[in-house]
Length: 75
Image (cartoon, rainbow, N blue to C red; front, side, top):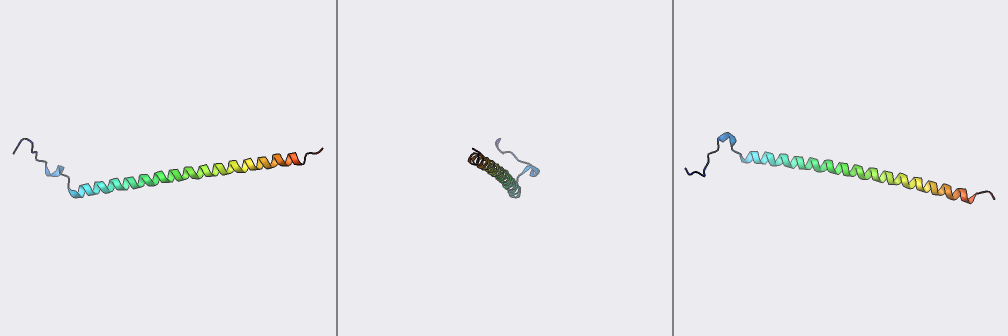
């Protein structure tokens, strides 16, 4: 044997099944992280939409009140 060749003990060898299991584990982790990220983004967008809606309703109510008080002001 040459100096570059090393014999790896059988218990340290990686089999095709080991690589396949690790690849599936990485894929499952990536999918779960992507789903979690999507859930967080969707929740943030929903919250932002609700806040914008509430602000718009308050602004329109305030404008309607302001215009109503100016219109019926006693002379």
